[in-house]
Length: 91
Image 1 (tube, rainbow, N blue to C red):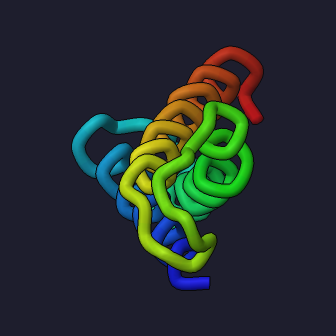
Image 2 (image 1 turned 180 degrees about the vertical axis):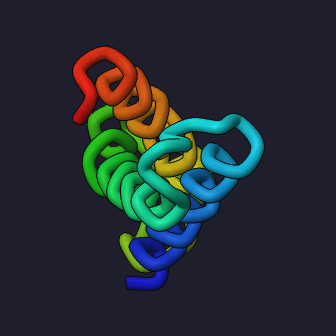
């Protein structure tokens, strides 16, 4: 459970950084950028990391840095993709 919370927090932080410094999703606002980042962090930690082979921790409840890294990377990717979709199609 603590890993999921870390993934969501990391994704939210990536959303805030993407909005504040990289100007992603500028027209949508900071709150939506954080929510998109949180969603990306959850998907990255829960789905992408096991597909790639997270391996790190023996027990699922133990901390492993690889899923956290994948959560950050997935959040950034989803933020960039959502910004591109918004620029192209307007939604």
